[in-house]
Length: 217
Ligand code: HEC
Image (tube, rainbow, N blue to C red):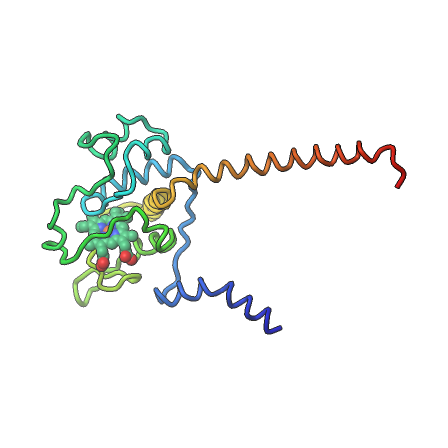
């Protein structure tokens, strides 16, 4: 019995520690890495809303283009307003030093953020901005006192809720892809491996029947 309890505890541990870290329930991002249209929308939204401050320094434009189904020219137009080369890493448009001056802190690179904190965290964080009537300031329920402004305020206020949710989901989906681009390939490889194993199993079974056919047992 003790063993089972211990096993259960081990199983629950990651969830308990996540809950303890943020102290709030994370919303499910419900993203889908196979949804290319969502990834494409996410990339464009990321360029429009996030690259003023954030970079994705471990990603090159041409890699994103290949994975998302764009040509090199298309991605440079869509994500860099024609101002970068396809082999360039995705760098922020913010000039060095400005973040410290304006925001009082450094801006983290987001290449690995989804690996580090998980898509549900990013989704909940982006939607977690609340206006405090008393202090007349924005705060974030996931990261209190954060230096990041509520960048999606316009969408949050003006667009229908479904559109706002979808925009945040698309950005989260894109960042999840960026965190582990190989996942796209691995998922499709997984199916091929399963199919191979299945066919191999049938052949082995038929072979076994063939070998034992004339032997009494
Ligand atoms: C005006 C600059 C600015 C823009 C634009 C901006 N951010 Fe940020 N972001 C920051 C800063 C500064 C931090 C560090 C926050 C802190 O440490 O309090 C941050 C932190 C983050 C974090 C990490 C939070 C954590 O828990 O450490 C994520 C995720 C993030 N931003 C996502 C985004 C996304 C997605 C967009 C576009 C929709 C975006 N940001 C746009 C300035 C910005």
